[in-house]
Image (cartoon, rainbow, N blue to C red; front, side, top):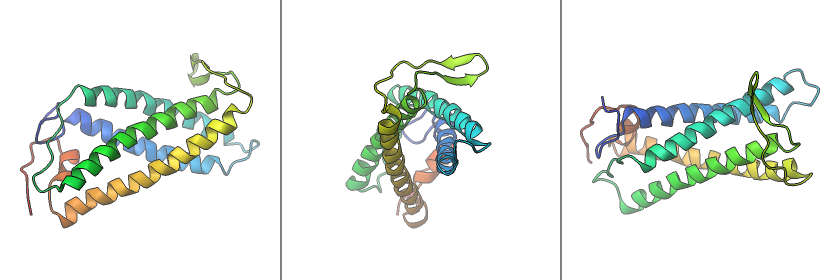
Length: 189
């Protein structure tokens, strides 16, 4: 089992970061979609908000770790069966994932701290409000947050579709590399 990425496959750390973040982000999207249906007086309003803030901060922490890990690690080389356009599209899609996630995490933080209060993660542990821009901060940044989330959702659908295309139609190891930290043998058409 590889801990680090190699030129043939992803290591266990990359795989765990990928899947933990994927499930957390899907959960955050579902929770956010549910939250917008709640009124301020709904008994679950504050609980849902706390979980959304908490999980959002976890994703932000994992994102920083993931970016640092990616910048200091080997990357699997593209398969010989890949077309040049697939390599380019994958490269820019992954960069866009990171940019969107940064925008979403930062805007989420700015929404939650818009009134000057920090984000309480655990009893006694508070992430302070560092920036309060204006009175309408939550509304303006909330719109940015929402738009970035929907762009991320569209990119996620394209990403999953591409992975399934590689697995079922091209019959290559693209999906296997992000599921299994072993050294898979390259299959071509």
